[in-house]
Length: 217
Ligand code: ZN
Image (cartoon, rainbow, N blue to C red):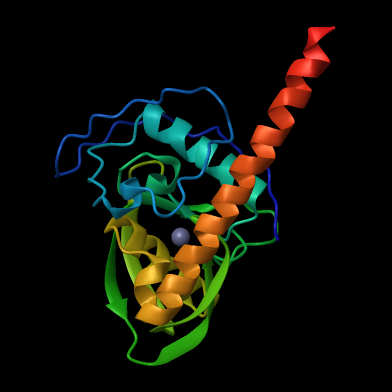
């Protein structure tokens, strides 16, 4: 997976955008944020429009970038780091840039066109660790959004880029990977994720006494 450094030198510029006023604040200064995993109900929320690009948004994008790099994802929606706002990022290389280029940022994105020509391929999601399912998507997708300077732009993707644009837009509307599969496969995924979460809990519980014993001396 491609990695890049974050260039955070964007000129601050407040741009009013039609839509609801967003009230959210960054509670942590950590660069890498925990990823919200299925079945956390937050993932079902419809994210709200941003009314401008301010320092909070730039900080959120910087942290999402760090988080996506650490998780080796191809894209990340803000709701996946518990920020219910209409914003996602796509790996710079996936978005047609050079290897190591910064991620492409989409603020208040709207899909304006999806090709009738389709593609079917395995799709993953950072909120569904180690789950890959075949999903049919449009081969090409065109999205209108604002960039980090608050300027409107349109981007058209094909193949993996188009898949990422459609997948991340779904997140903003509370639609998830698991909605793309039939009921049998859905149960298998749910069971696997429950088992993994339980194994992680047991793992942590086992380490806890050791940690306490270690610090007792
Ligand atoms: Zn996802």
